[in-house]
Amino acid sequence: MKRINNFLIFTLLMLAFVACNNKKTEPSDLDKLRNSNNTNKTYPAVQMDSAQVINFITKQKVQELLDLSTLYLSGNRNTEIDTVIYSQMKGYFHKPDSLTFKRLFKEMDSMKVKTAKVNSLEVYKDVYQQDTLDFAKFSVEYFDNKNKSLGIFEKNAQYILVSAPIKFKKEFKFYFLDFYSKPLKKDSTRLGVNK
Image (cartoon, rainbow, N blue to C red; front, side, top):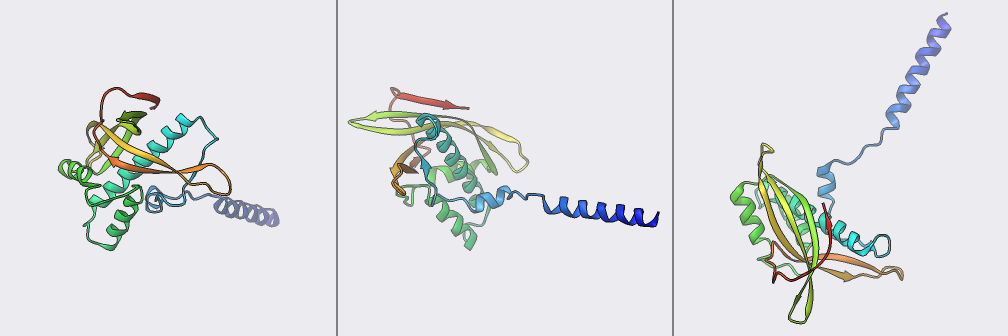
């Protein structure tokens, strides 16, 4: 009888050990955000419909940039980690300059935004003179430090897709040209809606 009890205890301990070792630890949101940047991310051009791909990537990039912005604004803005976050944010822009984040930071600071969530996004093309420009119109909801909604705001961002062929495949990189930009005119060609 003692042998059976010992065997059962040994079996239970082994099952518990195996169960503990098989748990997959998913990185936290902070770890994902800390490691997110615009480098080494390319997207194959043929896996989804092009409008779906562009909507998906644009929504992802807008959300990542807003998350990095709230993280940067919650710090002192003069520490080493703040410098790293700021340089990550600049990596989302094709040619960042000193005015790149001015409108975004001013709005978020004035409202004391702690988190932001992209609710819907629509990608469209706009013709200005003889150029076709790519824009994203999206609604963003701001939250305070108590997770109370501060409101939903309609915003625009201009982006560019830069060809980045890797190993003879057609791929591209996504960059913002202007964030929280104003639309040029009302007549545009809509590509799709992602809600």
